[in-house]
Length: 154
Ligand SMILES: [Zn+2]
Ligand SMILES: [Zn+2]
Image 1: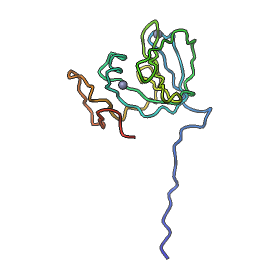
Image 2: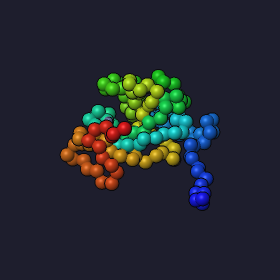
Image 3: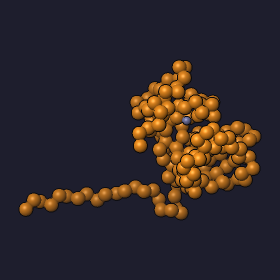
Image 4: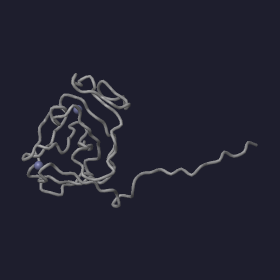
C-alpha cells in the first residue's frame, strides 16, 4: 500500500467575508464624485488602446475590474457624465474631467475602474499590457509584464 500522500491544508484567500470586505475609496480630482468599491478589484492591466489614451491623456491607462454591484456612490451622481466610446460608457466628472469608471455595454455586471482615481492602499498592481499595437512611438514599456497586441487570450 502506498503511503498516503500528505495533504497540506489549503488556504484559499477569498478576501474577507461579504460585509467585512476591504472598502476602497475613489474620487475625482475636484471630489464632486466620490464612491467606494467593496473590495475584490481584479484583472489590473495597462491598456494602450487609443480610446484609453485619449480618455486618460496618458500613454496607457491602468484599469481593474469589479462587479458593478460593488461600486457605491458616496456623493450624488449629478457630476457623472457619460460618453459612449463604442463598447461602453466612459464616465467622468463634468467639472474636473477625471475619468471615474467604464460601464461595459456587453457585460453590464462588470465595471472597470481607473486605478489612478482610487485613494486607498491595497490596489492591485497591473499584471499585463493590452492593446500594445496601438502604442504610440513616443511611449515605451519598461517592465517585464506580459504584453498583448489586442485583448489577452481568455
Ligand atoms: Zn470632479
Ligand atoms: Zn483601452
